[in-house]
Every structure is written in C-alpha cells, then in structure tokens.
Length: 184
Image (cartoon, rainbow, N blue to C red; front, side):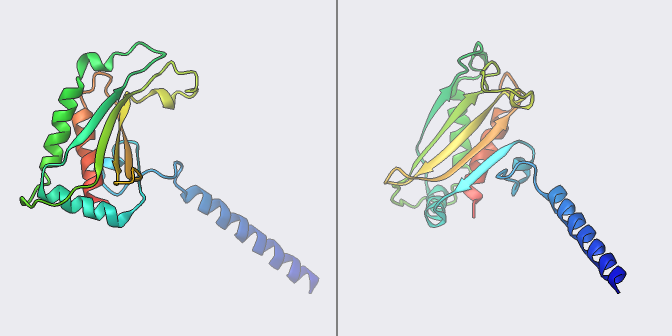
C-alpha cells in the first residue's frame, strides 16, 4: 500500500513540475509588448492606455477634424548624433500630420481638450546604461503621448525603428497613429 502512495506522490510531483515548466515556456519573454496590430508585431512596441473612455472620446475627435500636436527630438548625447542629419523633425511632423488626417471621416467641430505629442528618440549606443548588444540594435523609437486637460497621460506608445538613417520612420509613425486610433 505504501508503494502505491509513493508512486502516486512521485507521479503527482512530476506532473506538477512538468506543468510549471510548460507554463514558463509559454510566457512572453518581454511582458508589456503590444502585439494587437501587425505593425506592432514587426517592431518592439510598448503601449498603455490609462483612461479608455477618454481615449475613445479622442478617437471620435480624430475622425472629425485635424488634431494639433507638438513634437520634439531627443538626440544621442554620449555617441555622436547622426540620425537628424538624414531626417528633419519637420519631415516627421508632415508624416504624423498625414497619418492623423487619414482618419478624418467628417467635419464636425468637436471640443478638443486633449494634448497630443510625440518625440523621436535617437538610440544612444554609447550610453553606459546600455550594457547588452540587444539594447544597441535599434536606431531609435517614437513615443506618442495623449494627455487630458489635467495633463494626465491617458495613452502612450513607444515603437522602435531600425534604420540608422531613419528610412523606416514613416512606417513607425503610421503604426504609432494607428495604435492610438484603434486602441480599445
């Protein structure tokens, strides 16, 4: 009788350990990464919504009129900056504006109490805080942020681009705007 109990206990623990190992293998190695859109699966993307009702209100505004935004750049500081020799902020602004305007469906005048902004970050490969090879692979990223009238962030995304001359920034801008416009 005791050998049956011993066998049962061994089988139970082997099953428990096997299940635990299987679950660990199925986990996403980088939690928080957004993957709901195809473009998000093609680049490292982080996305977070903090106030769904307000995001949906902004999405209605986006469908009805031109949405103003602010923009900026963040050049690398430890390494020599090269990205902005090839890409100007005004060019990225035009890309961003074009993508925003592609969502306009009608011309309603809705009150807009939101602030939309984005910035282009150039990856600083000589930053002493970047110790892994993986952290030096991407050329930069675009952070898009939506805040409400209380200046609280209600949506934010960060999407990488890979080309050191910014050739894929337009694709990243498109994904950034689509991510905001379709967030649910």
